[in-house]
Amino acid sequence: MEEPQPSLELRDIPDVAPLLPRDWWPWWAWLTLAATVALLWLLIRWIMHRNVSQTSLRRLAYDRAMQSLESAKSLTDVVSLCTALSLTLRHYLAVACSDPALYETHEELLVRHQAFADLPDTLRHSLGEFFSTLCRYKYAPCEEIVDLSLLVPQATALLQQIHAVDPRPVPAAS
Image 1: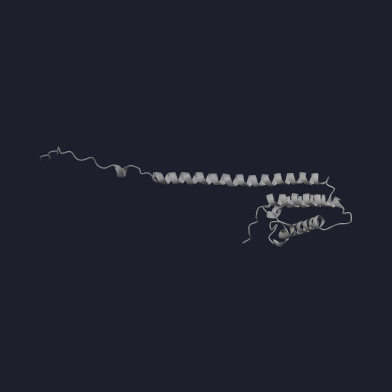
Image 2: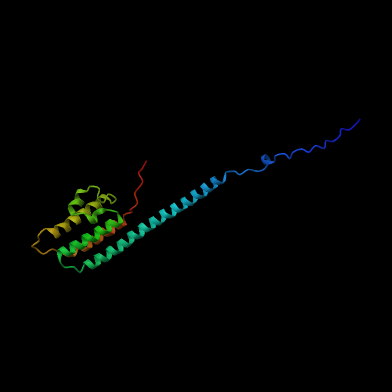
């Protein structure tokens, strides 16, 4: 038997591309994933920084209000004392509760029903009564001598109660 003659014809190199491992995702998908992770990380940092900032602003406003109430004890004029107490409480509410009470008149504050909506009802009622008392002393002519010794402790107690309220919204029950 005769053996077949080997062919001297050169064959083309076979394509090895199907045998090579492929990229799981293209380069732009990896880039998009990296950008998304970076943006998510920045968003989380921003939210945490904002919460810390709001808490520190609230604490700073509380400290300033306490100092202002302490210095208001030296005031002897009814109008000056009531104005100082009102401004102190309203400034704290503007910072802590993001309430526009600082920029409103007493009448505008009473008309606005959603005023101090974050506060409990009893505290909101006490605050409204205290502001009404201050308004009466500031604007109504008063011939008799007014006992001013109770106003600063009342304002201090209200400030402490407001500061004790957690400003974050409570999630609704399902």
